[in-house]
Length: 454
Image (cartoon, rainbow, N blue to C red):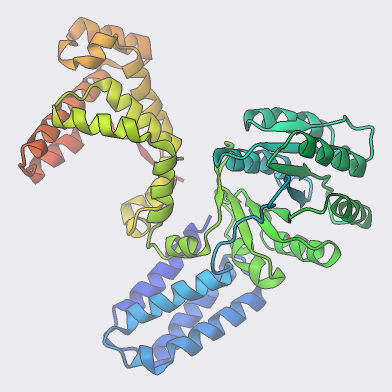
């Protein structure tokens, strides 16, 4: 989402860093570029005006202009102000000391609210909480059925009474059930409309009074740009909410909503949905997002994703196999699957420091189909072939290619790459550093996922 803004800001700050000293004219020029970049990203113009005024004041301070490396100071200031603009320190949900924590979800129709309920349920379930969902959207066709389906996929209990009862009564009944059954959390999916109206707000207020939620979360579609900010303002005026769930943050929108919503409404973004799958849902960290926008990466989020997906015992077993030179294609397949569970590889690349500025990766995304092909090739092998790729002769390669829908050339590439990788690991285990030319040759023979331009 922030690609265009990220490119413009990094280019501007790169120009600032290249100067040994900064003058007021240099700062003015940088602020002008930053202002244009934010406006093009659809950031609220009042927010842009306030943001750049604060930046300019800080950048013209004696600490910056008089320092030996003023460019780095400016980058630091921009990072800090971007973080503050998006809410500063990330905030978690408010959990009840006893009884179920009630989370009321609100938003317009089409914002992804029902799916966001299931994603939040899965997120809380992953931390060991027993979560239930209340189906209170009785107006949208199939809304209840949708919540039942995605709720079951998320591993949550779904309380529903069809579409004939009053949503307020359904919410109250669901809360009683959650208390009786000792649930840790109850997420209430309320009705959305095509636009903000009095009837919708009145119903939301009644459900809020009856359930007394610990948090009211507004679900907004990042793809709607400044309209999302307008919706948030309307909800803030009519029915107070505590935080925002930003959906479709992986889309092609320019990012103005995510950068404006805290400054305009005073309410922080608590969670962000970054894909269609239920696991594509995380807490929103303003400091980490600011670092990613400025091309500094997001190592903490990358580590957290790895910790969630990588089994510690498997990791120790793999380390032992590497030391003994016993790595098999089965191990390779398991590791590839664990990495893919962390999310799209193009997203993981963006979390690496400096990768956001890599010219060859700009506007590129990983073709996941190539990884599917590698997996299909390995799955078409017998257990003996996966354990000992050296036994795969010509006839076996033809059979494997036929079984996986690939070409013999692709099978050859995979076997060759795996053999080279094992040799490399053997060298490193013996304390020898690999020759750079050897690494280049290995990379040249690797069936790498293709990078295609968006």
